Image (cartoon, rainbow, N blue to C red):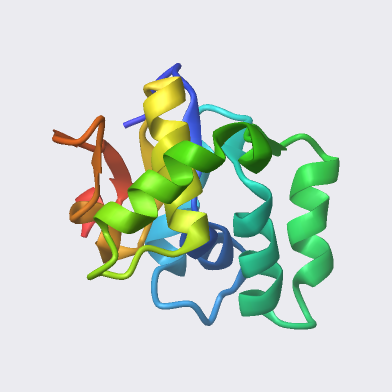
Length: 139
């Protein structure tokens, strides 16, 4: 299960790790423990995670950053044209800003995404390549 390559983490996985009430919590914990760290993500995934976990766990999201378990590995301003292209391509889904940033990160880093968001089964990197996933693949 665990690899020695970079792994990108989505807000759905962050929430599942931190919230015992989340439907994916029991599946997320062993994956979290077994996957290579640090995880990489974008700022919009952190913002989304803080919102979704609620007041009780907001500081835990920030602690994952502070402790180096998660790192911000993306600059939206450097990738705006690619993000706009992805969002236009998946307009019918529709693709969120967070999802588009994570797909672009997967393209840049050639890395899998740790997620429980089924939309990532639809998205493709480099136009036609399936994105390797952790979380959803165990479901």
